[in-house]
Length: 192
Image 1: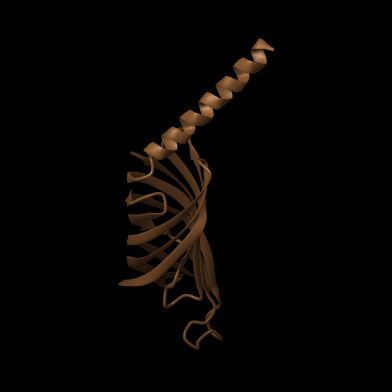
Image 2: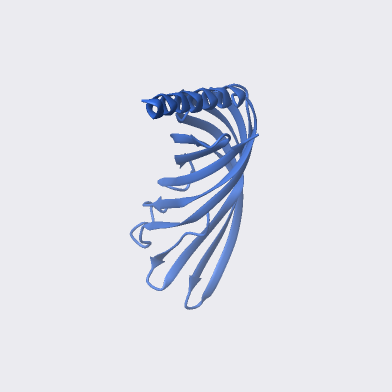
């Protein structure tokens, strides 16, 4: 009986402590990073798709970010996003490699589910630079471009320890030259 009361009191104390920690961590600065898989598809190369095969490739991507949580529901974030170097064969023995990186500010909306879980959505604008390289048996051609595009993401997160937040996130990029450009991220952040 004595051990049962002690266990109940210990669980109640841990629950109260975690609730107090969550309340202490409702607003403020956070920073983190993530790794993911970026996938890009181009089915129509400006009406020359009879000559060029479809481009469908993926690569490992990464990002570093920092932000300010106004409250548990709204945050502002800025991120450096590197989408890797996806490459694919577009003609026999001809390969296209695309390297993209840039910066993006976001507005983040979060809906906490208890002290531990949350769902979120982000909207932002991605200012990026892309380097293209076409490699064939007769040589290679390179080009680059800088532009900006709308991006959005959604996912869910879990709060572990006092100040660590881990998220699984799906992000969509609205590049003009692609039919589909998306990333799946696993990120971690420390909330100061």
